[in-house]
Image 1: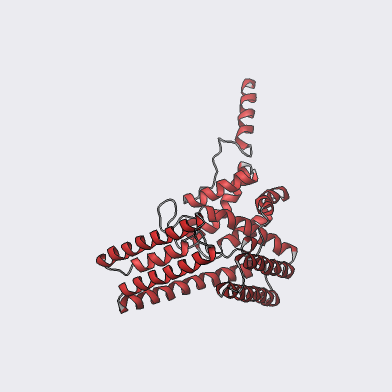
Image 2 (image 1 turned 90 degrees about the horizontal axis):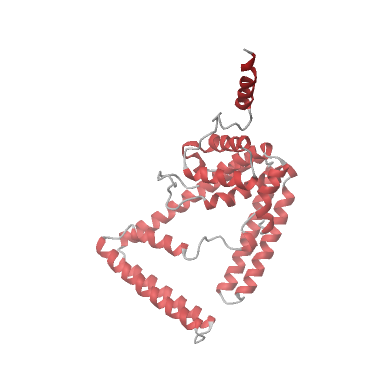
Amino acid sequence: MKRLILPISTLLLMTIGCDNPMVDDRVELDNSELQDFSSELSSDLGLSKTSANEVNGILNKHGRGGKHREPGFLWKVADELADKLSDEEKARLFEKMEEKEIPLFGNPKGKKGKGKKGGKNRSEFSGIVKVLTDEQKVTFKAIVVAYKEKFKAVHEQVKDGNLSKEDAKAELDALTEAMKAEIDALLTDEQKAELEQNKADHQAKRQAYKDSSKAVMIAILGMTSGQVSEFDTANQEARDAAKGLFEKAKNGDIDKDTLREGLKTIFATKNEKMSNIFDDNQLEIIKIHKALEIRMKKHKSGKGKMRGGKKGSKG
């Protein structure tokens, strides 16, 4: 009988061990987008299996069934991680952000957030294609291909030194207007009205999402009415100042370098004002949210679909 004591004791120790592989109590996430996000967090932060499981539990709590696409998802996660993560894990979470000097509020280094190059045109074109007949689509494609070659020719002239950047900009602007005119002539009045309505609906949906996300942020941070007012004022001042700079650049009153430096100053001022609005606890949650947001963008798939192939709402 005594011979069984050691083997049984060893088995018990193995069974109750924190990260014992024999006890598979892992929280499984229900889509690959969240799973990839979780795996990156665990790797970056050097989490133990137990800690990684806690993170999965938080992600699952707020993101199961596509809820990770709902407004304020990352604010809810950031709020819980502020209590769960150790100081060392938080430091590792912030490392990349601090290395690249990414500000807590707004876009890094004063860049205007328009996504990847050409993204705006692709979005506009996809909207137009949706209202075209099959016959119109053939013509539309021919127009786009033809102007793509014309744009390319202008860029090649600049590259070869046969055309100045200023003259190239004027030519590109003229080509853009000409292309828009040809596309506009292709559309019927009904299609133009449908495009305008679709655009208005899209903008309304985006604004509703932003408003809902902001409401969650206010609730999570426990912002006072005074803080909300200061936050809105700082945002509006930065938007107005940036808009003024873009108007000057459009009119040729300032060059790109002046525009870039001006935007940096505007958003640096905005970040300073924003940072002074919040207390240390609020700022920590904001910083965690920003770090999560940066990582989450890498794991979001296009066209409103998750990597697992299921459709989801915008994140």
